[in-house]
Length: 93
Image (cartoon, rainbow, N blue to C red):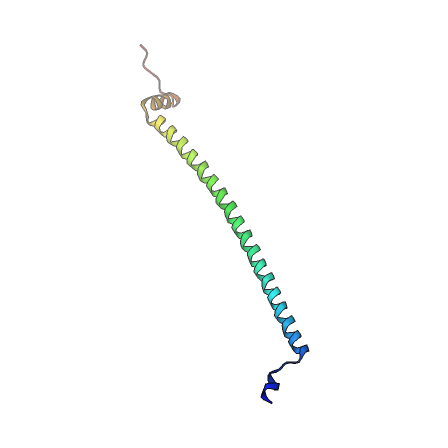
């Protein structure tokens, strides 16, 4: 008699199978949605990284240009030209 208690009617077994399939499909859809969100986040992070890398390169070029200007203005010729621009004059021979 106890064996009969554990036997399921065919309709109940079908309902459980359908519920398990639906749960599996929903889980797969959820995981696909999570993957899509993660791929979008990765794409956004990569584009941000590329933008920041381009900005870093631009600033490095600016620094190098300013370094060259500083070297010029610290040189004797640069100071001479700056003095002339400020109104200094050279002694006449």
